[in-house]
Image (spheres, rainbow, N blue to C red):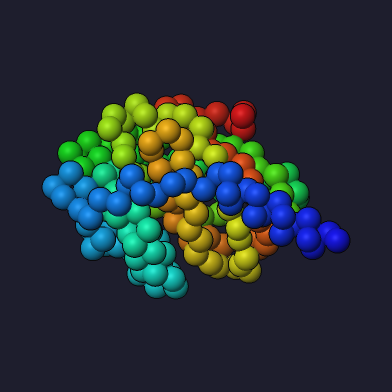
Length: 190
């Protein structure tokens, strides 16, 4: 019975929080980053030996097209059914402009463990850099011991985020939550 309720909750979360991708299927232009550019940047941040990194980036490009911005940074978090996640990095725009950015957020679900990750988040439909500073709900799943790569999608309005994480730690489970992106660091997770 517990297994069925987990499957139901996970399915409900996917249907509720997953974005509709039809409006974001741009294939690349001068206002967006190419797959090769993102892979080069990700390998520089995460190391070219990160297993699955190229596949995760390829999957995001296949699902959503080319991003018009990306965030590169680091985060850490932990969970014991209720979790917290904190991170910081830089928002990179196609124009060459960069902005410091912070994020934090709570989660709830069947999720246990802790992690420290390097993150590259592909950003879609960002018309103004101020549009990133809000809450982005999402569903996340993790299953790794000592190292792993994950990809999930978050959406708020027209803006879609695709965080790709390579991390170390021990984490297992699935959760529902959100990340709140800010201009300043905050320990308050909400």
